[in-house]
Amino acid sequence: MDIKEFRKEAHSLVDWMADYLENVEKYPVKSQVKPGEILNSLPDSPPDYPEPFDKIFSDFEKTIMPGITHWQSPSFFAYFPANSSPPSLLGEMLTSTLGAQCMSWQTSPAAAELEERVMGWLRDMIGLPKEYTGVIQDTASIATLCSILTAREKITDYNINKTGLFKANKFAVYCSAETHSSIEKAVRITGLGSDNLRKISVDENYAMISDQLEKAIEDDIKNSITPLCVIATMGTTGSTAIDPLEKIGRICKNHKIWLHVDAAFAGSALVLPEMRWMSKGIEYADTFVFNPHKWLFTNFDCSAYFVKDEQALVRTFEILPEYLKTKEGDRVKNYRDWGIQLGRRFRVLKLWFVIRTYGVNGIREKIRKHLELGIWFKDCIEKSDSFELLAPVSLNVVCFRYHPPSINDETELNKINERLMDSINSTGNIYLTHTTLNGKFTLRMVIGQTFVDNHHVENAWQLIQDIVLLI
Ligand code: PLP
Image (cartoon, rainbow, N blue to C red; front, top):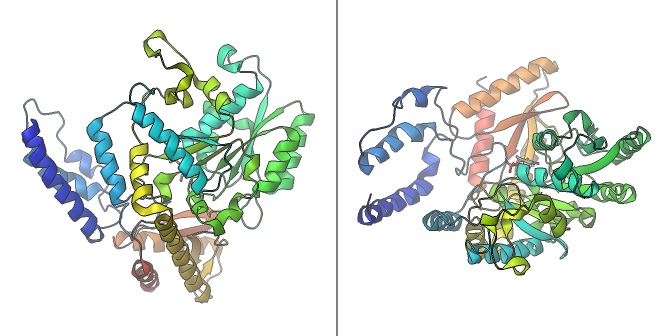
């Protein structure tokens, strides 16, 4: 493909992209294909000879599109959103076009310096104290892994990196029973072992019980196990429960334990001053992560990781072979040393575009709207005789189930609600997913898509009530 052809195809692709965004609601939100359907329609071997772009694109429309779940549909209420926005897409297009690999300052000074500046903006936007420095990671999972690795190195005077874990003390890591699975994965990868992850019980709101945390820490100390790190969650995946950060922070301070805060989804709501109750006690945190790629209109991937001790992070990860040495030394930030992988995409460009296009107030308006829609949906559930809430609604996630007065058998209720969810999703009109809370099959209504509006949530509620009559 030469540049002339690229220009022509790119123009028509941009038209296709705009049409897609305009018409995204015409597609079934959850892909309706069966396992293997796409695979079996693809040729076994690659083409030996060039194929025209027209043909490739027509196969994309015919074969690939049916297998896409439309995360950018305003009727996408599943998981947590991976929302996007037009300015983010434009930034991403430029990132791809430049194709810059931004591992060091020298490999694209603008990428490094824009990231430094925009992460400062973002820190201020969510009300984090000035002492935190930010860096973009690909995902919250990786940011948490970086945090635990840094905690591990700092406590051992950076020795495990050198000698391995063989001679190390036995360490314990603490999180709540509702914490995201990425924490356990990180504990496995860091070599600490999931047997040493203490999953602290939660209260009736699914938030960590801080007294139980303290007890677990004291028990470990009695047994000569070193408490290494606590992970507090601001907005659990199941029900957006908020762990009591201030109490947890004080415990960590008293016992000199590293504290990481996982706010992957809920962190975006901190742009609203009225939501900062969630981050009371944040000053105790050593590290904090939230994902603009979930709820800040910036397409995947873009995870904002903030650290108090920049030097500890860099000392954990830096390694400098001859071929990576550059002359600028300490005067610049080389983000290759701020995380696991060497190569880095120019991710901050899309975030910069988003923040500038909407402005802080525009972003606040959207998030506030989502919270209001969450309250509206919660009220509908509360007013209904046939549905019930299964968790407090602290943000824009409503955990609920169908529970008519005539049925009280829990096994039956679980089965009915699973059937209800499958029937709803098979309409293609909306998409929602589930979790289990207290053994109860729980439907999660997550209202955070960039363009979701009142009528999408009203239609969803109507559809749910209609389907209930059919199952
Ligand atoms: N932490 C929480 C609370 C989450 O809800 C999620 C994903 O939903 C993650 C971490 C993992 O996020 P990522 O996909 O960015 O690794």
